[in-house]
Length: 187
Image (cartoon, rainbow, N blue to C red; front, side, top):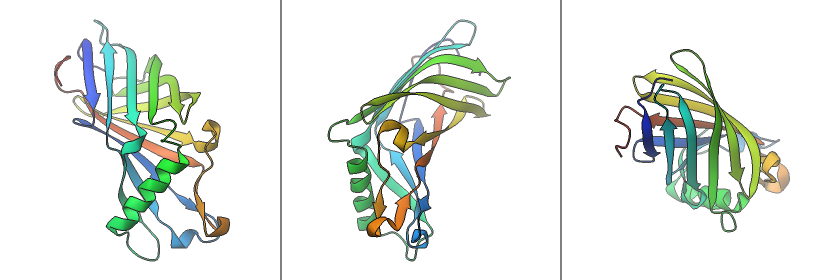
């Protein structure tokens, strides 16, 4: 990754964190694969003089989850459905007890000129686990990161309905987009 030296402020103003859920179970055709965004989040990326990232700290407000879209299912999602799903997601994640999730990057492994891997620690629902982000540069200064969160690894029981016939898969895909095209220190 080639990023200007300094401290880069990141967050929802110039980036996006999306959680992509998939349905499972005997009644999977009834449910929806969802795109849920963390609407409020912020962080800092510190980059050394040699353009190598040295620290990444991100804070995510888990009470700000918002359902952006749903595919599949027997009917389209209504606005009420989206609000109900977001409310259920906050309950499953225990956001009343643990309103904030954090990621702290500890090791940065370059992968050529277009990205690399960030190894760190994700704290979610009050539990911390090693976590890895795969990063690629989409355009100059615009980065895309992907990862997978296994809910049960954090003590989270994935949502289920219809007496367990409709479930959210344990593995949730995470997609992150960040704009680092502005000079360090710019917000």
